[in-house]
Structures are given as structure tokens and as C-alpha cells.
Image (cartoon, rainbow, N blue to C red; front, side):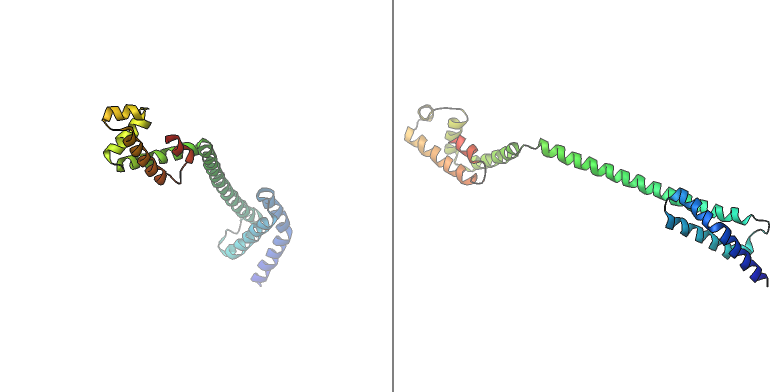
Length: 186
């Protein structure tokens, strides 16, 4: 009999307050389904723990407190999630800005020039000493074939041969890089 009275009282409590409590929760969580879930869970929690609660307890206030706490936890979770999403967006925006800035600053000519100079340096190092010396005097010190021939005690034909040999080697090594650069050495 007592259980039936509790059950009838609960049904009356549910009928009187459920709609108001859902509207209360929805005012804060702004999601009707979530508000309904919180309200239903609060009523269930009350029902499951009714025997251990104080008999002088204001039951609607107790249930509303449960809904309030669930709503607060929900909103705090949303706040943390939004802050995390904001940080992630901020980081993504920073990363995108960095990529744009570095790409704008990127000068392919300079990148290739560094690679080309490394290849030229290695190619020069692989040349016989006399060929390298003649090439450097011609291209880096702007000496004429006649001046180089006089300085090294060689014929101009010999100078031509060494320059031709060094250019052929450089053409082979630089075939994939900036033809204009290669021809500027010729």
C-alpha cells in the first residue's frame, strides 16, 4: 500500500513538474533533447534514492537541483570543448598563416641557385687541377684565353681545350638545373 502511495505521489510530481523542469533546463542548455534527458535522469535519481532521503525534503527543489547541476556540468563541458576548439582553430590559423608566409617568401631561383652552386663546386672539385684552375681563371677572374695562356705558359688552344672540357662536365652535371645558369658559364 505504501509503495502504491509513493508511486501515485511520484506520478503526480512528474505530471506537475516535468514540463517546467525541461523548459528550465532548455533555457540554459539550449537543446530540448538534452533538457529532457537531464529532467528524466533527475526524476529517476530521486525515485531510486527516495528511501534514503530526508522525509522533510522539498522534492521539487531537490530534483531541480539535480537538473541544475547536470546543466552546469554540461555547459562547463561545452565551455572546455569550445576553448579547445578555439585553441585548435587558432593553432590551425597560425600554421596556415606560417605556410602562406613561408611560401610567399620562398624564391625558387635562390633554392635552385644553392643546389646549382653545390653541384658546380663538386664538379669543379672532381676536375683535374689544371682544368679547374683554367676554368676558374676564365669564369671567376674574367681573364681572357690569351692572359691565362701567358700566365700558365700554355697555348691558347690548350686553354680552349681545358675550358671546353670543364664546360662539358658542368653541362652533364647540371642538365636538370636552370639551363640559363649553365649557359651563363659558357
